[in-house]
Image 1: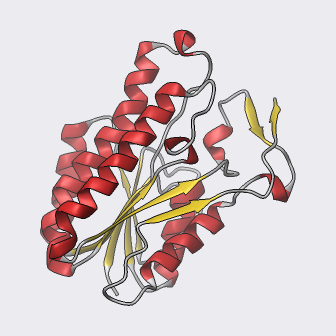
Image 2: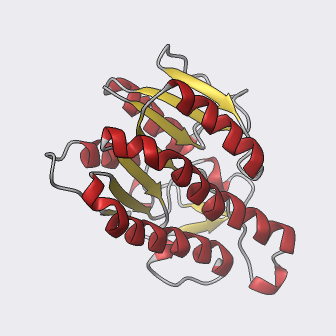
Image 3: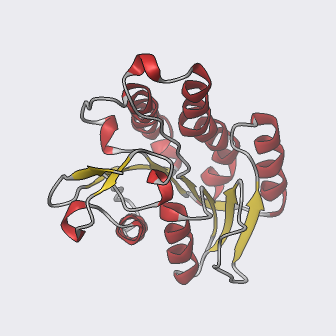
Length: 230
């Protein structure tokens, strides 16, 4: 059906979205730093190793893809988070969050828009519920996701006449490797987390709308909110 780029495609939400897009008939270029633990193999899934904090490398990687392909879907999914009282978050971690969560999506969208205008395609930004609701001990992370939220809303107004669709998905706490290096995680209860497959389902729903209708925002929340310390 079309060509997609998905960032953070080696695991979690990005991998689930990639699998769903392949199942729907799309060819997916998955971008991540490391695919050594990714077991998904398919002729329509092309893993590309790239560090999103390296803007020059990212530009070259995506330009190489766009020389060969007309892009239909860009999924800005990759994200990183560091949590705690703001004065305890090291500046290098703040910079990493800004680069991965905000700068990379802005750069990727800039590169993709010409192709997306041609295909009248989609920019799908995976933000976070923290973009919409204040929370403790994640101020910098929330700021990057709120920036992505505002970018998406403003970009839609800018490009909607061209046929490009801009959509933001706001998952609440999701059971992914995102929490592997953090000191908390979702409670082990299916009512207390969203799954990556749920987010992939939201992406499929976004893409299934009739031409002329755009689902611009999707919020996914677990029935209960309960975390546990490791």
